Image (cartoon, rainbow, N blue to C red; front, side, top):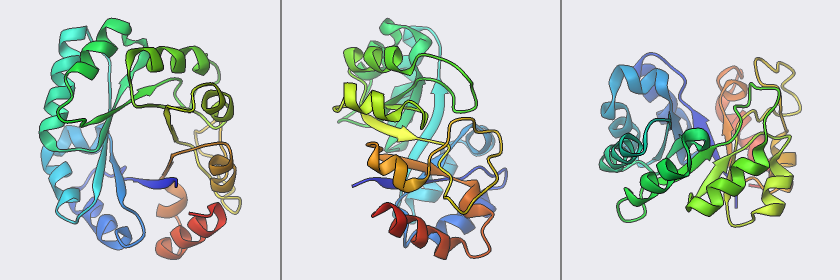
Length: 214
């Protein structure tokens, strides 16, 4: 069954923690991206973990193979559930990153095409991810079905999820509703603004889960 990942896109750790406390009864996964991690580092990961939730550490690693491997090894030390690497980092870097995992952690999800981009070849990127042993890919709604159909073994992490009632598209170019994403094979739905901007965030989460059959 698919899972919701709530994006902790905040600058302040206490504000991020308030959202973890608010949503942890309905959401088990929280994304920590560059904005929060650069300021607080592993402290941000520990904050989520102390509330019994898992961390998607969205670092979008992209460097030479040895540095990619060391970055994944460092991520593993935090105990995070997953992290991201740019598939464009080359197959050698992807292989090195996978070899640096500890006891299967973190799961490594390859970034195919950023959801704010208008073009790119997600299918080729997914093929590279599969061949190099990544656990999954971060894929746009527009490319989700063809990627999942071609590589059902890969976990598909989908940003840009927007409930039908949420009209504001912001900077995302390739969006799906939660039910559309699940029906197309999404394993993880990354959702931030539609929940953060809701009058009743917890009820909004419940509505999203009901709509998507989660």
